[in-house]
Image (cartoon, rainbow, N blue to C red; front, side, top):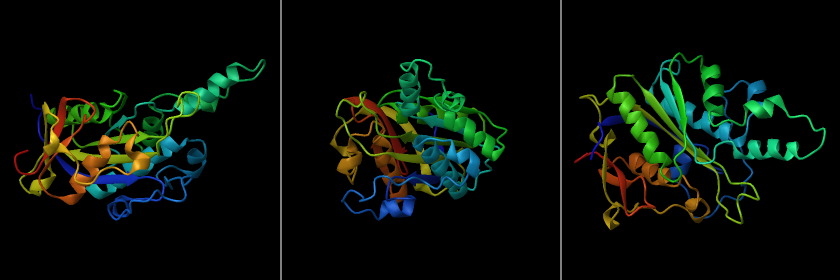
Length: 263
């Protein structure tokens, strides 16, 4: 089974110690010393930015990078946001407040707790006239997000940006599990005759065999992030060479993204 093809026009990336794609491509193997860093997220006005979580700031930062790299109009591009747990930290703060007698619930935290928080903030900041969506599909979030975007492009909806973002789980939900935060964004459009071959992609289903393994494994501090499959796709697209990337490496068979020759 395959899905319509699309072209990747631009990328965005952020993780602690890696403020953009260039920094990520040059990364060392060691974990960054400062894990408390936050993205600038200058797309958002200062007063709006101060009210947002790390997840929303990461999403805004990489969306802006991908829009800029792809030369896309931020007011006309559809944005799709994918996150496994979404604004879970803010949600837990609200739940904790419910346990305190007489504790008022914060209206700001309430509207910051929904899965499409980042979609709303970025749409307001850019004056977007296009649609947006937020989805969650466990470790298949990247695959389902790309399918959604490929369908939008094939339907003639214009340019689309997929944003994948995930932050560490708080306790007690983490149950001892640890991973670092990161976000990536992919600016997609319909294929054109002038596109570079390596930017033309097609989604297909098949077995996840050794030929699909990423050339550069994810760093240990990000490997357990439930959206880590996006790291391999970012690396493959940035390398600019034909490749096939497993979008659901946790499954014996799943969706792949074919880049360049054979896509």
